[in-house]
Image (cartoon, rainbow, N blue to C red; front, side, top):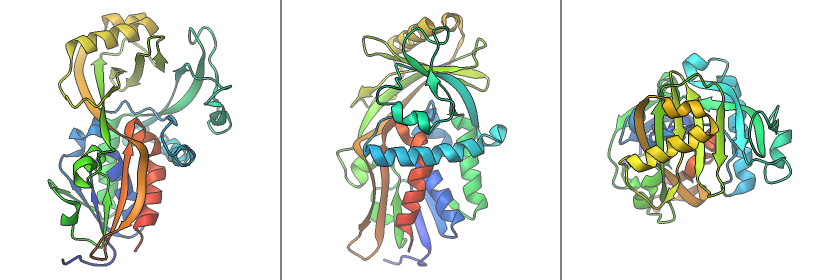
Length: 316
C-alpha cells in the first residue's frame, strides 16, 4: 500500500477527540487529514452538555493529568468565549464532597469550595468551571485545524487499514466497536431537553436518592437539561416520557424551569469503555495505529490532555 510522506497522519473521527488531536498534530508541523463520516455539527460531541469536570474514568491517575491539562487550555480559550465557545461559569456539583473522592481537586481547581445552604439543599461543591457551547466550539476547532494546514475529508470507513498514511490515529469513539474491533466499547445513552432560559446563569448537577441524575447548563440563548445514562442502549429517538421526567427533576432544583418553553430534544451515545484506550499499536505492514477512544462522557474534560499524548505517540 502506498502510504505517502513520512510526516503524514490520518485521524479517523471528527468529534471533539478527533478534531482536538488533529489540531495538536497539525500545529506541530505534520500533514494531517481528518476522515469523518459526519460534519462536526452531527457528531456525538455536538450533543454534549460539555461541562469540564474530572469525572471518574480509568485509568484514574492518568485521567486526572489529562483533565488538568485540558482545564489549563480551556481557561485560556475562555478569554475569547464568543470565538471559542468556552466560558468560565459558576455552579454546584451536587453530592460532591471535599472529604471524599473529590478532595484531590481542591488543590487543583481554583475557588473550589463546599456549597452553602442557600446555594444547594444538600452536600455539594461550588466551582467556577469551563462550560463549552459545542455549537460554537466544534466549528472553531475545525477552523483552527484548517488554518494550521489540515484537511477534512468526508468518508465512511469500514476498516482502519483503508487509511493510506504511515500513522493512523483512531478517534472513532463508539465506531471503534466495529472498526478495531473492540467489543469493550459500548454506548451509554444520554437524553437532553433544550428549553428557553428563564434567567438562570449558573449550572448545577445533582443525583437524587433514587440514583437518577439531573443537570442544567446555561448556554447562549438556551438552557440544556439532562440527564440520563442508559447503559447498552442504542436508540437515538427521544423518549417523551424520559424528557418529561428530566424537566421534572431539573424543576425540583430550579422551579422556574417547569414553565420554560421546550426548543429541542437531543440524544447522544457516550462511547464508554472500562478504560480509555490511548496507545500505539504496530501494524503488520510496518505502519502505526494510535488509539484514542473510550472516554465515555468525559470526552470534553480530557480532550486536550489526550490529544497531546496521542500526538506524542503519533510522532514519526
